[in-house]
Amino acid sequence: RDSYGARVDVVVIGAGQAGLAAAYHLRRARLAPRGPGRPPAVGGFVVLDDAPAPGGAWQHRWDWLRMQDAHGVHELPGAPMPAVDPGERASVAVSRYFAAYERELALPVLRPTRVRAVRDVGGPGGLLAVETEHAEWLTRAVVNATGTWQQPFWPAYPGRETFAGEQLHSRDFRSAADFRGRHVVVVGGGTSAVQLLLQLAPVTSTTWVTRRQPEFLARPFDEEWGRAAVAMVDERTRAGLPPRSVVGVTGLPLTEQYRRGIDDGVLAPLPMFDRIEPDGVAWVPQVARPWAPDRPVPAHLHADVLLWATGFRAGLGHLSPLGLRGRGGGIVMDGPQVVADPRIQLVGYGPSASTIGAGRAGREAVRNLRRLLAL
Ligand code: FAD
Image (cartoon, rainbow, N blue to C red; front, side):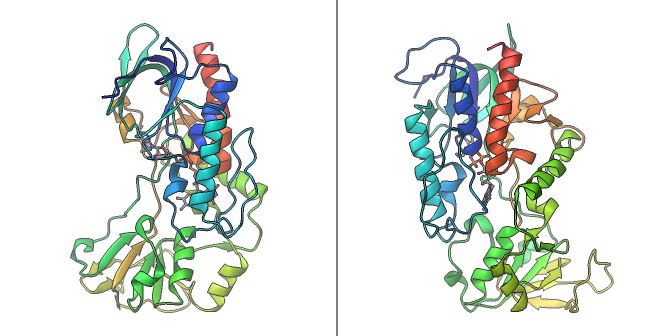
């Protein structure tokens, strides 16, 4: 039992882009790093991360995702990402960068340490207890930076449990070669669906289904586009609605590769099916569709594999004892600050769920806490 645990000013949960950015700003605010090997004292901060190694979710990204496929990995504060070979695996290159960052800034990251629950224990100053598998930390505030990777989202469709073929989430996709000769139905309108279809096309047949008509926009993914996406998601979280993904609100950039996929008929979506059957998927003729493609919808389509590229949700289960969710199904936010409890800052959540947004939110969260806790 690592019985460390102590009373600190801030516990950061998660050491991905968002958590490391927050840790950087806590150090700049001269908070003392705490953890084994450092003098025990009251105050300071610690970062608890349940991953086996540095890199946040990037360490788990698929082998096929190369730096050139990532839509731009923004740098961590105060340390530009060194030049890398565009053909290098994103999981390796980004994890190496994060590891060097933790080391050079001597950030107090304890891992693997999973946070099970955060509870309000009241008392003077309104302390929070952060419960891990090893110890309990008492803290005045929490910066939550747990990302979404651990919460793959599988929408419910009738008959899903009857499907006799293979079903998997994009998170568990390894290689197109695993699906050779099997008809794959790819579900989802985001970047992962598009990238997976393009990988599968040379080795097998595919069908793409989406809830909304995918929107390909013939302009580069630039800062203006990013800002517009962030503003739209920000509006949702301020209203306490569950956040949507950035692509969900902006559409997909029409890259040369995607254009070829459209011309070759690989990126030719059908509206979402209505039902899953043991040997495929089915559309009910009378059902009104939210959008209609150029080609007719079949009544039944054979499928060997259902690949759910349906995204991720924020992994906030450990915060549930705090009862932060409101009637809209989401948490009412003001930037990274939880309106109902300003001791809790959510970074990498909603509008800041991108590498650029995560960095900015880390800075803002620390600014908020310095004011709140008079640090
Ligand atoms: P993460 O990197 O997920 O870090 C969270 C950390 O918290 C992890 O280390 C995890 O182990 C830890 N953790 C989780 N739960 C607990 C717990 N209970 N206790 C302790 N530790 C915990 N953004 C871009 O800007 N460009 C891109 O090209 C891009 N590509 C993407 C591709 C995919 C497939 C996905 C899913 C996302 C992509 N994004 C991209 C979004 C981007 O990855 C994220 O917004 C950002 O990297 C997330 O950083 P984070 O710090 O919020 O979370």
